[in-house]
Length: 299
Image 1: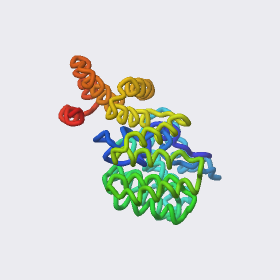
Image 2: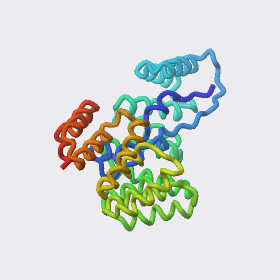
Image 3: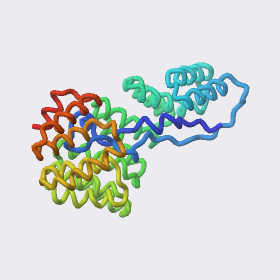
């Protein structure tokens, strides 16, 4: 049986950017799809008549139907039925993913940690726990997990990207640049180096350089978050038509992202379109942002 959290992996994204990206625009608006939940399906030979198997099979059925709470209950019953089963590390990882998707970060971190107790060198688990820790604001613990990944897998670029973005957040630009340059050496074809450097230059106010680097990545792999960040640079440079194009493209990809309406409100403000600005402020609020935060971002 290949147990997979198919629905959850599609929707419950791992945040390998920064926790603060959920509350402000500067570094990015949302984690992009490439940072989805890491999951490696494992084939398990087992007695298909056992309670353990039946519970896992039922959990998968619930996942397929996006019935997360019921899937979690079946996972828990499987663990209870066989606490020493060799597949329990994988099961705990999936349970943690479901809990993250339901917003229960503390429970998710606990179960990722239990899975790591069983398989302490599992890179995927370390990356997933680090991402959950970032969401929970525990950046020091997340940093330790990412650094352990770099030790276990000297070729891993995602851990270096995440460490680099954390360095950008703390204004340690020398460390950030070094980590992004490491990515180039490990995989010259990876877009993560240009992406990270682009975000760093945006943070530094080097908007022309940021646009150049972000454009490299967008050309190869366009996504809403990168388009939004480039649009923000264009707005700062008063290149309003280009900003409008990027915002429009980003909204076609993720129309529920409230920060895109903040950017469009900024655009309208720069064009003295007060009615359009007010419309987008309201849309940003309708999609989940606090009005005071929206107004602060516009000012």
